[in-house]
Image 1 (spheres, rainbow, N blue to C red):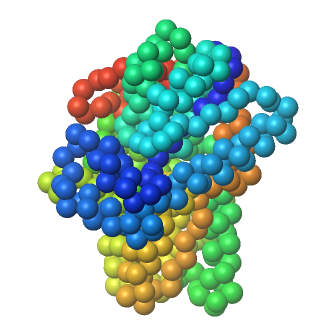
Image 2: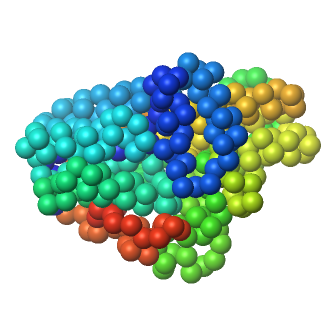
Length: 350
């Protein structure tokens, strides 16, 4: 499909104190998250004035992507819509159609295969089409996971190289450093169901975890460093009786301190921008844990508007003749609560 409009799809976030709890209720609807957990997370937002950084970061990304498209001589219109806050997807799709467009190529601000990070966005877009009454008016296809693309990995490698160089300037030896690659924890069942059926045959962990390990190895290889590293998780939000991926980043810092490590570098490979879960969970909570343990801590930036990352998004939005994506098969990253309509996905690989 040759698109006549492009769409950046993201998670969303509150932009004022009154929006915080309604936003969290939309995010967790039907998931059985305890009210006290919502109130705890709400305090994180309220501590920052009730404003999530993510929408401002998406505006910056949208502007950078527009500049990249203009530099390539591409005049396709570029829109932005959110899953959980304004601009809501149904409203944006209605605007796209009112502007005279019929074929939309979308890309999300989530790089990895999982239900919540991939398939759910395709459900959201199908639901938004239905809500706006545009099922027969708009064709939408979504670029599949792009975690394995150089433009996604390079910003993390650049940041890690800088962090390792800074540690060296402080006379911290490699034996005293650990690199903790962090990503959002998800239920272990969701991890096991991530990826198409054919990619789950070699047992646990699921493709979500394996994809992160692949990125971590590639980043370490690019830096040429022999520093020890591991994959850890953060931002658990589910009911306590449901097993989620571990270890938590704070528990990992405790373990590293017991092992004699004096310096930790956090590399948030699960995220494309410095939004709330990076700023609060890493720059606040993990930083406090490291300070209590007497560990020096550095945190690598997320891709944000790094030129390589913006170029990657442009490449994927403009690529021609992409086949249907294996990640987007009916069996991929299934919704544990039952199948729902989805818009088609296309592969992010040449």
